[in-house]
Amino acid sequence: MSFLKNYKFGILFVLIFRILLFTIIIANIVYYHNWLNLFVAVIALLSTFIPDILSERNILIIPSDIKLMIIVFIFASLYLGSLRSFYYRFWWWDLMLHTAAGLNLGFIGFFSLYFINKNKHIDLILSPTFIAIFTFAFAVCLGTLWEIFEFSMDIIFGLNMQKSGLVDTMWDLIVDCIGSGMAAIISYIYLKKGLPSYFEKGIKKIFKKNIQFFEE
Image (cartoon, rainbow, N blue to C red):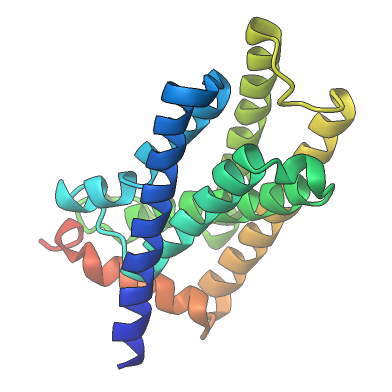
């Protein structure tokens, strides 16, 4: 019953979020003509469909609760952060999201190598230390590419994605490293000693949903 309630809440949240974004898109086309907000709203709306597309095409089947976490992050970053100006209203909003992004990207890097390690068709055994280092490096690399993207958008289109410039960029990279480091440490502990927690449950859910990749 609890799972069913959470599942229904997730569907309702995603539906309301998509309707809200669609309304913003129409409003900016017809009335406000704020093309930056229009662009952000379109990107946010398309992003909400990515987990479903991956699952439907059998590329990666994502459990419903993890899908909801992804949508919540999109909501917090693109809608609240960009469209509702939370980045300017709350000085800690950007730092919080970059820390969360570093953590989540680190887990994506970990899951990638973890499943390669578990795949019987791939003759490759990786140590926990190597996987932890890759987890950290993967997330920091993507965080750096995002900062390059922000810089490029500011230079080419005259935006203000970097806000205070170098200071904003350095703090973003620092908290990216903190989030990535947390993911690397959690991953290492899990591989060495096991981690009976939501993290382990998440791994088992993803593994079970994508068992076709690991069968003979």
